[in-house]
Image 1 (spheres, rainbow, N blue to C red):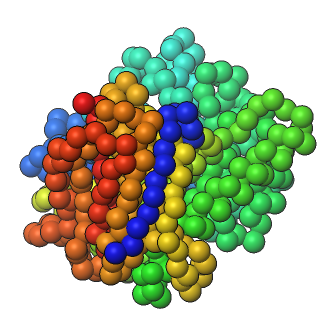
Image 2 (tube, rainbow, N blue to C red; image 1 turned 45 degrees about the vertical axis):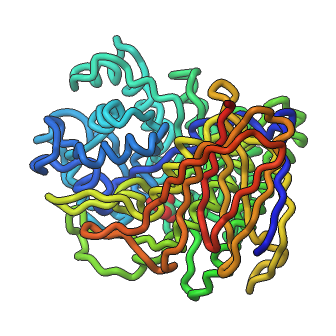
Length: 498
Ligand code: AHR
């Protein structure tokens, strides 16, 4: 058995976790919208065509914010196509994913759906094929109360009250040559500056997100963020990061270590933001929006019919190993919650998602649903510096990988401490000693764990074996509590003041 020690103190906080760190993403891509959240005619659809079975699963997670409508899709999107009478909306060739977009679902449907899902919108504007003018018109359409062309247009479309969308993405992955309207950093920085400026003139209460690099392996990584940010520093509030991990080589040990890269990526972007802050002698701090993150590789190469409507695209079926990596990614995001204020698990339904559906049929939770749900439910509060002393190992690409990783969250008003932990070891238990000297009276109440599954085990519509086990705990207070983490396990240890 391996052993670890964790020390936490109420005085050593990383940050109060911004709830938006538990966000997600719905793109007009494959069956995320059509057949995912929206399927009129489905036996469980409500009067708006929203699938109630999907809404129920989303409410279980408690998703605070959802990015929309893309992704790559947004870089060719004409938002006007998706508002007004449905029968007048154009069918368009959708070039990002080579499908046909019917526009039956658009901005107002999404905002109505957000209410049902008890979530907020994070809206993206098209800075690929369009620019500042269309972006500011969309802000006017969504957020201006009335008495102007676009706000009255919204009212004529049945949305009397402004949507009040507070968070806006200035385009998507503009550094990638796959993007419609791809730009270099100077072109993009200037476009983002003008768009952000006009959008904030329309509604000064909004916040904007600058596109950082599409991932840390882009050849322009670092330089892209610095150049673009310097050109629009006063018009943006966050820089975006995107990261998807894969296990194409089948090396799960190495796969489980990839969150070291994630941590490094975050810290590098923080440095770039602070470098530009210093260079400009600014008082304003730019934070991070990790608005696409997940595991993504199972579905790559799957075929679909070009220009079809809502085909099966990127429908990764996640296994238990993926759930462990998602858990580790959540731990890493929480550990960096002093700067990561927004994060979106990409995506929410069907497309590289925790929730899957069949058209006309069931909806079910994939393996990755559970760590995401646990983090969202129990990860709200203050993230604590989690001083972790553990044994280490090396993998193909990484050295000094902790045999376990963990983060603790203290919810002061509810008087709870939650420890999220992953044991990376393939064979041995890890006995964790948690120092609770600074939390007198806090007793363990529950250990939720996912362990003992075949790493390749998956959930399907007919059989969903990969799910957590809830073990009630009823110990007395002790300054040092011990918990045993099974080999290859995701753990949520919940303590509450007696
Ligand atoms: O989430 C799927 C796609 O991944 C998004 O459209 C794009 O932004 C990213 O490359």
